[in-house]
Every structure is written in C-alpha cells, then in structure tokens.
Image (cartoon, rainbow, N blue to C red; front, side):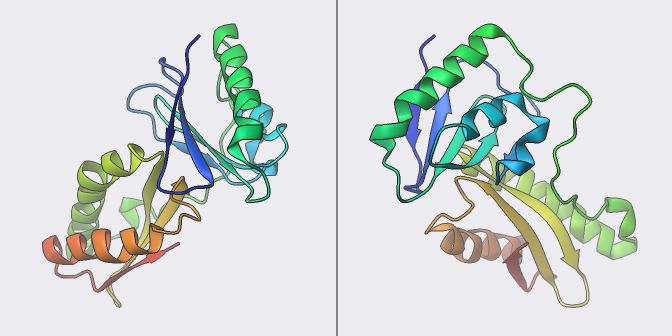
Length: 193
C-alpha cells in the first residue's frame, strides 16, 4: 500500500493519504486530541502508541497526526506509515462498532427559534460549503459549535491540523470571521470554542 503524505500549515501536523476511504465520503471528521479520547477508534489508538503523537484527526479520506515539538517527523513518520498501512490493509473498522467519539456536540438547530434559526442555518451553510472543504485540504477541520444571538458571537471548534496551528488564529479572525460578517450581518465576531 502506498500512502502519500502532505505537510500542513501546522508544522507539528502531517496529513496521511492512504488512497482509500478512512471514514468514507460524506462522513464528518473525528478529532482525537488525546490518547484517552481515542477509545472509539482502534486506528487512532494504534497511532497514539507511537512516541511523540499527541493528536489524531480522521477525515473522509485522510488521517492527520499531530506530534509534540520534541520529536522530529524524520523519526516517527516511518512508524506511522507502517501502522497506517498495516491497519488499512487488514480492513479493520476505523471506528469501533457502536462507539461514539467524545466530542462536545454543537448546539442543536432546534434550540434556535425564528430569525436566530435562519441566521444559524446561514452560518452552518457557509462553513459547510466554503470553509470546511478548504480547511480539509490542509488536514484539519472547523466545526460550528454555537451562536449567541444576543452578542453576535459564533463559536467554532478547530480540529486536526488546525488545532494549535500558528496560523489558525489568523484563519479564524481574518478569513472566517470576515466572510461570516460579510454574508451574515448578525455575526459580530468568531471565537474558538
């Protein structure tokens, strides 16, 4: 099995492309920011066994691994490539059957009423169609969590390569905030959840 790798804007994260589905088309990515959070994924658990791995993000067709600063990619990349290749070749389930990742859920759309619900629908639509595809190309994800109609603040969760990335604050503030404010006047600012 040939696995491509791509650098990401976050020097501590690398994107691994196994050439086959990881979670599958249309699946929402799953973030495992710690080894303890990886109980739902045998693949993520396996990757955390490599010294220096501090985060795993599973996307539709890619895996992003985040390492500690103390470890060089040169030293752990071969072990990660081998682990991913062996796992994917074995055809094992990436997410354990019946397991649910422990990520804080977004405020359900049903919690918003009237005009607030319309605003949230616009925000979610913009994030899904314009932001997430671009961020996924860099090995990360940005997920809507909550909108406070009273203050106009949108809370987003940064995942994968975006979490801890030196340029994530600029992406959040200059890119996403400006776009949301342009298309949705009710948005005043965007914050990381």
